Length: 207
Image 1 (tube, rainbow, N blue to C red):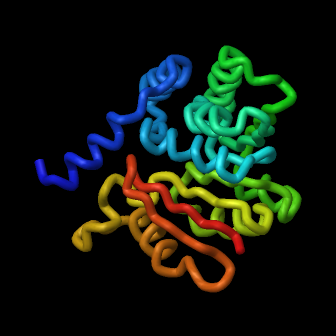
Image 2 (tube, helix red, strand yellow):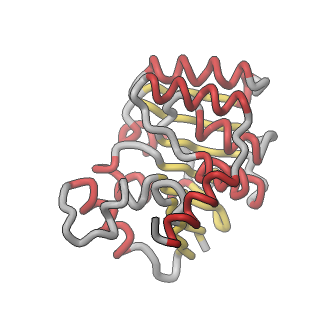
């Protein structure tokens, strides 16, 4: 195994995942929903804590793995999570309840993010996590940067898309969307960083 791969594995194994999040992860895998890795989840928690998040939007609820990680870093936060699959959200709601998250700190919206996001208030959120349909990632990032406050952060999970984005021989719509995002993002309105943990985590701070 190359040294860099060993380092990535070491970074992932460094994380001790809380029991309730590990249980949600197992349920996610059983349902065929790909959750963020434990290393990525820990990074979500650190970011949420660093920005002292009180308002979070999550695009792609899954069964609550990423939401639980963000709330571990910012337990005072209120999270609005959007997903097309109400069955997944039912599982996520149960996971939040078991974790002791107050009901008034969770708002789950079942619907298409492209239809829900335009109705959300601009510059009103500390953190936006995008972990949904990769074919729409450019649109979601545009919305995320509109919704997040100045100094807030937009996170894009799976930004390296199964290790295909960095491989020039790889093709496909999802790969192309992420490559376009990584090529075009930047400029005077954001500070950006790409972490290789898990499947890649793009971090964008609105300035």
